[in-house]
Every structure is written in structure tokens, then in C-alpha cells.
Length: 283
Image (cartoon, rainbow, N blue to C red; front, side, top):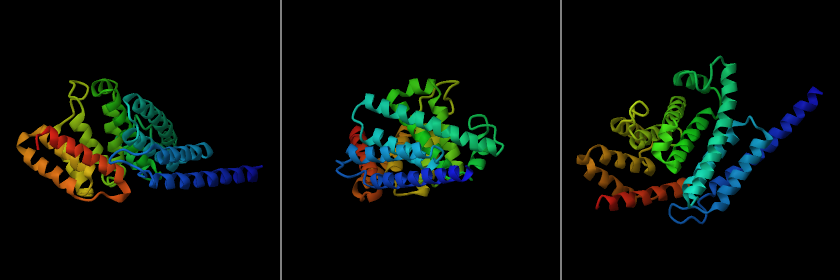
């Protein structure tokens, strides 16, 4: 009987692995047919479907789950065309994130950690470093919460605790591996500090100084990342108008350099954002 159970588990894992590989192929082709920073749905929908099948075959597989979270974020950010569609996608991503964090919670419990929500960020990160895929889960869960907050409104989201959730998840991801996705954890934290409404007793920790510090840290990890450059330029101007000429120059340079073919849609969207900011600033 034990042999049958073991063989069944291996079979499910093998099928799940094949589904992840299929999802990865579609993910790599996500820019197919894109127009600037807008992507077509076919490839990312196929990636999402493959990762969902992998999760169904092997529910404890964190690789399939974090890649699903990443794909849902891509669809919401670069494919969805309406706020209602974004709300639907990011609500699904939040649910998927909660399910995945529950799996990590059980694994952390086995390591003697109280829980993802009750232990300190350092305690969670120290224990989660030995769990493959945990850093990516915390990162993409934080990103999806950030996108959800933008879809539903910054003030409403802040009052529901979204900002603290994003800050905690991104901080844990940064403590696990600051180099994830080209310095994405510090990029998320920088953007969070810059965009979060300052509400006394709720988000009083939000700081433009911290925004620029985190974004500069992200820039050190990946100096060519156009998303980070746009976020940093915007934070520089919102924090100090004296640095506006420097921010404008940063964005103009961003428009003249080629995009990374592995992130064509994402970087094209960052260029679109840069053009919008330059127009807003009269440059």
C-alpha cells in the first residue's frame, strides 16, 4: 500500500513538473503580439492555466504557486483593460497568495516558527530561506496586494491594512534574497513608501526619504531596470522639486536605451510611464 501511495505521489509530481514547464514556455512568450506596454492575453492565459493545473496536481509545490502569482500580476498589469477586470484578477491573486502562504505557514511551524503573521520578519525570513520558492511567494504576494490597492483606491486599501501587508511581505522577501527579480523587494518597498497616503496612526511610517533609499538600493542591484528608474524619478520629484532636472534627464535617457528582450512588455510599459511623466512635468 505504501508503495502505491509513493508511486502515485511521484506520478502527480511528474505531471505537475510537466505543467510547470509548459507554463514556463508560455510565460517566455508573453510579449508575443504586444503593442508597447500592452500584451495580448493568449500566452499569459495559457501560462496561468498550466500553472493552475500544476497546482491541482501537486498543491504543495511552491514553484507552481509563485509562478501563478507572477502570471496573474502580469495579466492584471499589462493585459487587463478596465478597472473591473483588474479587480477581478487581483482578487484571485490575493486568494491564491493566501492559500500559498498557508502552505509556507505549515512548513514554518515544523521549523518552530509561530506563524507567518505572528513571528517577526527576521524570524520568518531566516527560517524561510531553506524553503525553495518562499522568497518569490512573499514577493509576488506583496506585488499583487499593491496592484489590488491601486485598483480599489489607495486610501481604501490603506485603511484595510494593505500597506502593512505589502511592507511585511516585501521586507521578508528582501531579507530572504534582495536580488530577486533584479532588486524587486526594495523596489516594491520604495514604491510603497512613495505612493502610500500618510494617514496618522495607520501609515505614518510612509516616508519619501525611505522611498528614495529603497529605490536607490534596488538600482544598485539592477542599474538598467526601467521600472525602478521611473519609480525613482517620480519619488525624487515628489520629495524635492530641486531634483526635478535630474529626474527628467533620467527619464529621457531611459527612452533612448533598448529594452531587455526578456522583459519587453514590462520595460515598454515603463517607457510609456516615463513619457507620461515628462509630459506632466512639461519636459
